[in-house]
Amino acid sequence: MRNRLLLINIFLWISLAAVHAQPVKRPVEVLVTADHEDWIYKTGEKVQFTISVFRNGSLVKNAPIRYEIGPEKLDPTIKETKTSAEGKITIDGGTMKTPGFLRCVAYANVDGGEYRGLATAGFDPFKIQPTVANPDDFDSFWDGAKKELAAVPMDAKMTLLPERCTEKVNVYHLNLQNTRQGVRVYGILCIPKKEGKYPALLKVPGAGVRAYNGDIATAEKGVITLEIGIHGIPVIMDPSVYTDMGAGLLNGYPAYNLDDRDRFYYKRVYLGCVRANDFLTSLPQYDGTNLAVTGGSQGGALSIITAGLDPRVKWLGAFYPALSDVTGYLHGRAGGWPHYFDKGNIKFNNTKEKLNTIGYYDVVNFARRVKVPGFYMWGFNDETCPPTSMYSAYNVTTAPKELKLYQDTGHWTYQEERDLMSNWLLEKLKAK
Image (tube, rainbow, N blue to C red; front, side):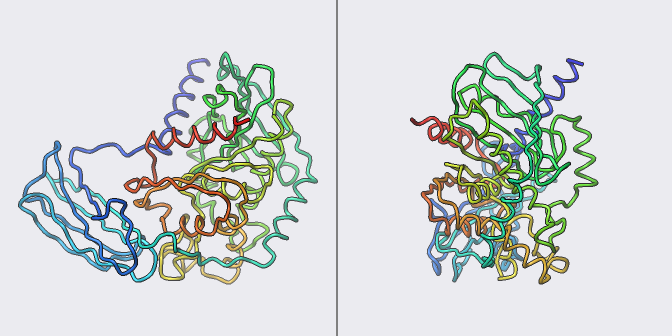
């Protein structure tokens, strides 16, 4: 039994690391760069992209290079193939007349294998404005939903997980009643053992179906942590259970009941984040003041949403937020994950009912209502959460904010980014 638990813990660690992990380095590297150091341009200004093909740190001579250039996530406007004797070419990428992002994707064939690289130029990104509607009754809708939630008993159940506890931290499998009887929120709760009052950190998840290990490391630094799942299922089951659910029952969950704002899948999810804060702020070990929320991708979205919904949150930290300005595709530009209206989904989702629902759930409209300081991180090469969509939310945020860019990153982070975010949150939470 103990060996089985050890294997599960190892699997969890690997799964969690993979969510933010830098891609594995390959023997051939296609490096694409823009000619401005920060990859930022003014509208109407031309960008030049340089494509280099490396093997063992040296340029690959006479490598055929195929490249495509166009607005991110849309069909390319330029498609060409060139061969450079030196293994490096510089091309005119054109420009954009309106704020947005222009992407160059390059492919090289070397030794029978195809290798890919990209770079994305931003044109006046801080001038990007959202396309999603802001419903007149947005606030009354969510105020009513939170009122209904508050009337439901929390019914908290904590189960100690001795095999995960450390010398400094007790670790529990937690489950709470969410929006109605029988609907639960599950997570991993970590509480410092030493008697005292502590700040609290809610960690919200990226997309998918998985188990969770909890943030023990942050708890050992004197912070109560709660890492939740969103699907109303225990988060300590055998990994095969989540694989089966992800491929079956929960396959495509982000679009479940999209045509009904009261039954849409994410309503219970958003309120579950508030319910998690209900629990954290009720703990006798909580210091009564300092509460933060953080996550990446879907979790980046939920961080902004939770801060916009819940005035108890004092800080938010978001990596590449999803669910941002998802209607962008309907206006000739990229929209946010899960890409409800891209060319593969538009015929199913472009209806009056679904468009009506979107306005109540898009991150942009929660970002408008955030009143607390936020720290944000993303890269221009993100192909899952397009930077156009993320700037749409960031640019309407009027609360104190800081954006740290790592332009070359896609839907992943460097360790330095994760460390920077952790240190920022700890500094805010533990400031006296």
